[in-house]
Structure formats: structure tokens, C-alpha cells
Length: 184
Image (cartoon, rainbow, N blue to C red):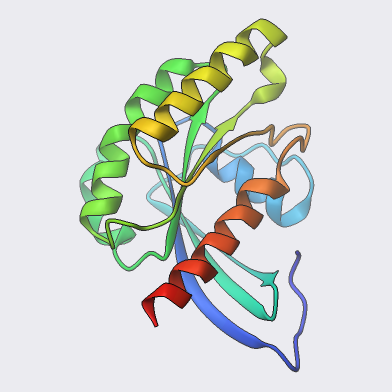
């Protein structure tokens, strides 16, 4: 899944917005995905970018991840930055389940400034900080949230330990390819 050079494959360049409240670990998730190492991140100021290639069947997605700061002071800029996205990752902090309740406003802005059927995957980060009982509550809450807001699925992971890290990115890549095929 990491960056490679491809000679006989079509390359599709897309934009994916990464959104959610401040402090949920969006940048750390992307750094773990890119390097397969835990690299603690400081708060994002404005926006960060990461471009990675992902093989999906015969297609290579060249994905530009737009990692947007979650603090309220930057929120008014978000609609302009998220416009033109082919997919989205929205993140919450499993150790602060209330961050899940902050996501509807992010979802509204993503859908308002893109195709309303944009593939959106929910990621619960910091799973390493939870116990089994808490995980049961998180699984139930995330499942209900996905149904209520018509999301494309959810994944629980830990940027610190690497648990569950590949799945949300792989799933979103497949959804983007399927969406592009329907648009043709």
C-alpha cells in the first residue's frame, strides 16, 4: 500500500479530506499510515497535506489527504478546503466518546460542499486507551452513528500501536473507485 512506481497501471488522482474535532489524532493517524511508526503530532495549524499512492485492483489512487485542523478558530475556513473531495475520513477519540457528538457539523460541511453521496468513513482513534467494557460502548455508539448519518462504515484503531490502521484507508480507496465508476 505504500508509495511505489507503476508502469502499466492507470493512475487516478483524488482528494480526501480528514476532519474531526481537535485532539482526536487525525495527523497522528496519517503519520502512522504513511510511515508505519508512531510519531506523536502537535496540533495542526490550518491544514497539513500527505500524498500517497494506493493500489485498488488495476487502478492506482494517488490520494492527496487534506488533514484539517479541528480547532474552532479554523472551522470557518473548512468549507473552502474540503470542496472537491472524492472521499472523507472523519475521526473521533475513543477515550473521549463525546467527540463523536461533535462530528455532525463536520459531516454537514463535507456533504454541503461536495457530492452529498461522498464516501465517508468514520475512524475511532486511540483504541489503545480503552478497556473491553468501554470498547463495547464505542462499537455500539459508532454503529448507531454510521446508520444515523449514512456513513460508509467505521473502524476503530490506534495510531500508537498500529492496531486496525490499514482497514479504513483500504476501504475508503475501494469506495472512491466504486464511486468514480458510477459517475462515468
